[in-house]
Image (cartoon, rainbow, N blue to C red; front, side):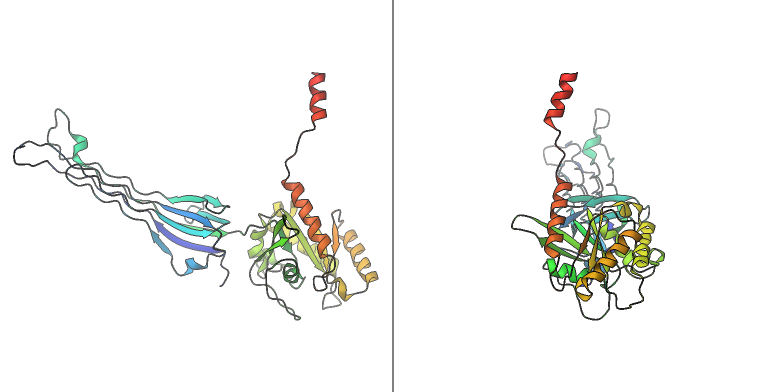
Amino acid sequence: MKFVDEALIRIAAGDGGNGCVSFRREKYIPKGGPDGGDGGDGGSVFLEATDNLNTLADFRFQAFFEAGRGQSGMGKNCTGKGGDDLIIPVPVGTIAYDADTGEQLGDLTAHGQRMLVAQGGFHGLGNTRFKSSVNRTPRQFTPGTEGERRRLRMELKVLADVGLLGYPNAGKSTLIRAVSAAKPKVADYPFTTLHPNLGVVRVDAMRSFVMADIPGLIEGASEGAGLGIRFLKHLARTRLLLHLIDIAPPDPDTDIVRDARALVGELANFSPDLLARERWLVLTKTDLIDPDEVAEVRAALIEGLDWQGPVFEISALTDVGLRPLTGRIMDRLDEVARPEVPDDDEDDGEEAAS
């Protein structure tokens, strides 16, 4: 299935049913009085997140959704039936916007989470509601109100703990294939991934994390070149970024340090918040060059990027360095998720001092 991460649809909530004008008429009750019932409420439109979907592709074929209309009121004080609500399933990670105003309506980040995107119309009142001591035969009623109608723009940001960032052919797809059950296309010739891939990396029986592979960036991506900038939003929810660098590029004249700096610049142009996220360097394809050359490239990158964070050397093809990398990632994610517990000794000392 083609990966689609944006969709534009039209939605319409149901109108409320009209109130009824009716009078009770029975053989031995000549003045039965008003008995017109209220209408029913119109159905509302909801989005509901589900793990069973991972793309917005279905909305390319159906672009209009409408909830049920409320039934009008009836005689004998019978209230009209309410319109059926419409629940639209969407992938977890979907953000909904009003396409006309740009207002963000909500963000669905958990399976089963539901969001109201169009309120159904309210019911009209029947003439029974208007009877009084001075108005014995009311002929007033109110119509039901219209349900909300809007154009809805949906945007999917995949949910992952770790995001892979790098140029095309840096080894991102090969890495995610090696450490998870994800099967993105890889080959022994240059090409780029065309859509994001998610893989669950299981470190042991009880611990795992989700890794996201996005299309590679190229220089000038922040001005619209290539595909990667379109998919960078999928890294917005990640807690850790792995900056993959191919230390054995096909072109021997490639300046690895300059390219690494350029990618950092593209990241900064796209989102300063994403640039500030914790990022680790991962040197890939170390099996293709001598260990001495690997050490030279590593030293040049650390100096050229003024790098202070962790640096890993891996070969996803030969399974070298993968276990230490995934283990360190899992430990770091556990640290980030673990709440800070105050030191009991410090608290006792503060109480004693006060």
